[in-house]
Amino acid sequence: MAEYKLKKDSYEKELARLQVELVKLQEWVKQKNLKVVVIFEGRDAAGKGGVIKRITEKLNPRVCRVIALGIPTERQKSQWYFQRYTDHLPASGEIVLFDRSWYNRAGVEKVMGFCSKKEYEEFLRSCPEFEKMLVRSGIILVKYWFSVSAEEQEKRFNERIKDITKQWKLSPMDLEARNRWVEYSIAKDEMMDYTDIKQAPWYVVPSDNKKHARINCITHLLDTIPYEEIQREKLVLPPKQVNDFYIRPPKNEQTFVPDIAIAMAKEEEAAKLTKKEKKSKKDKK
Image (cartoon, rainbow, N blue to C red):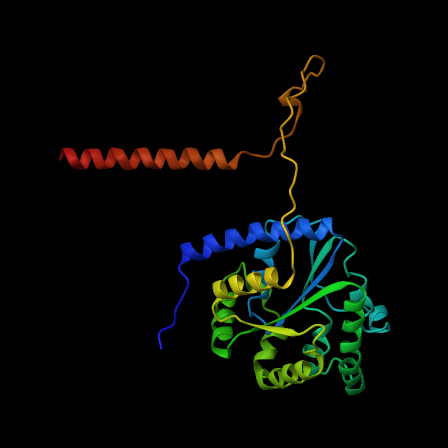
C-alpha cells in the first residue's frame, strides 16, 4: 500500500489556516473566561515539542503558556505529588500546555525506579480522581499521547547526535529509555488502562510523520474545544505625535551593536561583482 504524504505547500497553507483559527480560539477563551489545559505526552523524540511550537507560534504568551518542569526539588518531593503541577494550572482566560506532566510518575519514574511501587499504585488510583476534580472545577482538559515507532525514534536520535543545535534535546535518560523500550510500552498501556476516563480521555497522535502529526493534532484540538470568532473593533493607526519639543540625543553618545549584517551584505555584493567580472573576462576569451 502506498504511503501518502502531504506536500510541503499544502502543509504550510493548512498550518497557516489552523494558526489563524488558534488565534480565534485564544480570543474566545479570553473573552469567555475559560480555563484550558492540554497535556502532551509520548516517547522521547515523538514530536511533542514541534506541535507545541506550532500551536504557540502566533499566540499571545500572556494567554497561552507552556509548562515544562524540570526535576523536582527535595521540598517538592516531600509535597503531595500533584502539588507542583497545580501551581501552574490556568486562571480564567488562560491556556496552559504541559510539555510532559504529572504522567511522569506513570512513565519515567515508574520505569527508572524513581518512585516506589506504593507511590506508583497510589498515582494510578489518584490520577483519575484528580482529573475528574479539575474537569468539575471548569477546566477543559485535553490529553494527547504521541506515538512514534522504534525505527523513527532511532532516526531522530541519530539526527540529534549529529546536529550540535539539537544535542541538548538528548539526555542520558533519553538514551537509557532506548534500552527499556518494552518496559515503557508496558507502563504506557497500564497508564492508559487506569487514566483513559470519559471525563478526560486519551487521544493518540501517530507521529512518525511530523507534518501529519502537527496538522492532525491542531485540527483535533480546535474541534474539541467549541469556539466562535470574536468580532473585534477595527483598528485605526493614530497620527504620530507632533514633535515640537523633543530633541533626540546625538548618535555618537549612544553605544550601538556592531552592524555585522551590513558587513556581510557588502562582502556578498563584492563577491557577486567579482563573479560577474570573471564571467565577463571568460566570455571575451
